Image (cartoon, rainbow, N blue to C red; front, side, top):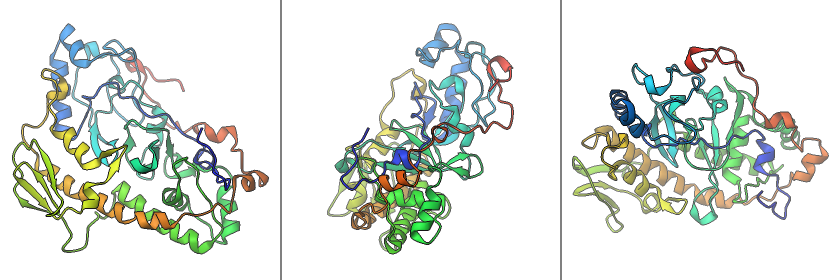
Length: 387
């Protein structure tokens, strides 16, 4: 458990008590940057028979062609064993596959070693998932936020809401009332998450303040971070003259990525995008540049003969737009670092205060998932799951 800092700031785990372990996909091929590749991979799997299908599937101890599992909540897929599966691919869904990397996933429980159905039950347009990254201060930010189901290798996942529809916030009971009394204004659950994103420390403690002006600045900065990370609604843009554009056409199959710091230009072979701020190129998470990882995921060759090797033969046009938006997001997030640094708040609402107010420790029930099953979920071989 992370150590508590000298000012007795409460832990994130106490403020957002319900958390879920990260998903374990078990195999890479059901995830891809584009949905068309996933459908082609599924078709290739089903065309193979016997031992060939098993090799393509890449079995693990958790999933084989004979595994019997039910549907994922909210998804319509077959539940017969994959050894005799037929039918079309389930419609891919968007996921956060790596920091700032939105990809697509076949939402089929038979393909995922540990899918965490409790997360799928509460995933909707209102939900926000806070994802612990477990990084040191120099390696990135300790908490990501996303509207998509996170499948990246990271720490605990903390949904903002315990039920679908944006109801029952995953905040320790009594916290909102306590903050309202101390701040003389009632924060919303997204306000609290925004404050957490703006002020959380590497040890995953969160300083809470009763200073209304400081709270307001922190929430405003945090909402900006939240909007950039979620990337829903209006698309982020840099001011005119700083917006990245394709200055030289990108090749059909770029193989190398190079940054020219003097020209502020990103080169994909002979293709060129500029201006690209140095802050966007230098943006790192877990010790690696986000842009380099994003590019490598889409261009590094896969092992021949595997399903992962089924991918677009050329660079798809939408991928260029995704890259331009990623550059923009990283540049704007980097601009917010001084604001976050200026919010070095001391916790004037301490963990001891919350214990005296009987808000901490959080009740055991708040650390368990809520019962949200309002419809039948199909179990293995077409039977209904008994939950």
